Structure formats: structure tokens, C-alpha cells
Length: 348
Image (cartoon, rainbow, N blue to C red):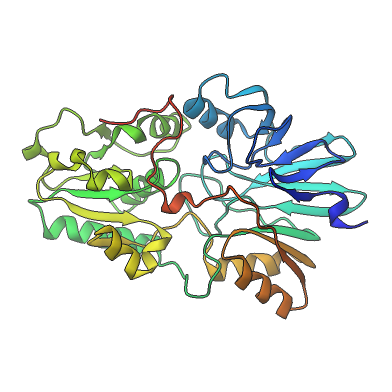
């Protein structure tokens, strides 16, 4: 049996005809299996959605109760039979509720990674290595130049700046789902116990993380606070807000941005970022190649990102490899982080 007898790339995403479903489809389909709640993977309008409880709740928060015709919760490690296939979900270490999806038919095992990282994150379960024959990997940072710094060290840089400039506010641009909460948790782990302020776009998702048992300490919306009260504080916001009129409420703000793209200094300069923080929720080059090797796969399919370099790397090591060239997956690490749906607040 060929892998293409189980999964086939289509304009709407990866399709499993024998199972009757798509994985992270980019257009509405009858049955969607969703890896995580970021907007480029979790879209509204499907007939039915299968995902972890956390991902389904995030979709409700972002799109409203009627985000799909129906929904079904699957637990990590649970095995379901769909058509002529079996599927199971396994932690991806990307954001709360994120999962890799294993699809098996007649002994052939394919794992679709979704987005993943292989480093510790206090806000979600760690990445689980799932042995497989074919591994579908992301390649957001699929170039050797992308080697992410230690996240704890990046947070230490932020805290050092706060101590150095007590009269200034620090604005940290971060995506509203996952990155923002991870930065808050890293600050707490580093011993920062003061109030962390939030832009309104972060409110609902952050509250859900706290409801799910993620300790983020005292968090408040910045709305309503006087400019003078915000000196020496840290506020988490969408990157676009740092250049918006919204930022004028802060005293001489220091612009920071938490993203794997901050490894490229030109990106930081283009955005006017004075304090780049290399913190990513995606695997870097070393993480990608280590994970691919560890799965034991003989074939790699590469999607959304720097596909060619990773395909070449795999082929040079004797694996079959191909790019999927699926249009519609973006990089939330490089987005403005503004909520995609009307259910999520926009300003505060």
C-alpha cells in the first residue's frame, strides 16, 4: 500500500478518502480533523469537527457556538475508527490542546504533525514522539539559520530591560493564542510577580488558559489605567498594536516582540523592535531534523514554510521526501495576533 492510498494533498488540505475526512482543511468540508486552534489550521464552517476539548473550546471562543455543524472531543491516545482507518491524537507541544494526528490503515502509519515544538512549555503538554512510516512535518523555520535561543534567557533580557528603564513601559508583541500565555508563564517562572497587563485581544484566550489550570499570576486589562501607573510595567499585546494609537497610553514604551522571526535582525529593524525576543512555538531547524530522524520514518512530506531545504535534507539521508505546497497555511508567529472572529475582543 502507498501512503497516497491513505492521505492525498488537495487544495483544501490533506484528504483521507478511506476515512472520509480532511486534516486542517483550508476550506469548509464535511468532516475536519483539527490539530490546534490557530486560525490557519482551525477554520469555521465545517460539517463536523474532531479535536481535543481545548481546541474545540478555543474555536468556540474565537468563532462562536456555531463554528461547525457538530463537534466531537477526542482524548490524547484515544483510538477511533473512521471509515477504513484508525486515528489517534498525540501532544504536539505547540499550544494548549495542540495535537499530532496519527492515521493508520493496514499497518501503514502516517503522522500529521500540525505545528509543533520539542522544547519545554509550561502552558501545554510536551511533544510526544510517535513512531511512523510517513511523517508530515511543518517547516516554518526549516532553514539552518533558524536556531532559537533559550526562552528563559530571552525572558531574562526582558526583565533586565525593565529593571534598567523603570520609568518606561515595556510592550511585548505576541500572538494571542499560545505565545502570549507562554511569555506570561515564563515571566512567572523567572520570579516576576507583578501584575502583567493585557491588550483586550488577549482577554478571552488568556482567561481560558487560567480556567484550564495554567497559572499566569495576576493579569489585568490595561484599559482604564493611567499613563503614569504603567511606568515599569509589562503589557502583552498583538504586534500591530505597538504602532497603533493604542500604544500612546504608555510612557515612552520599549517595543519588544516574542517570535522566532526575531532571529533575523532585519525583521526586527523593519518592525521598529528595539528588544527582539527569540521565543517561538515552532521547532527550529535542529528540532525539525531531530524529530524527523527520531520518528523512524522512511518518507517525509513537508508543508507550510521553508519546504525545499528540509526536503533536500531528508533526501540526502536516504528518505523519500516531497513538498505538499498547500496554499492557506500561514505563520501565526509572524501575524498581528488579532483575533480572526467576532467572538474575541479587539481593543482595551
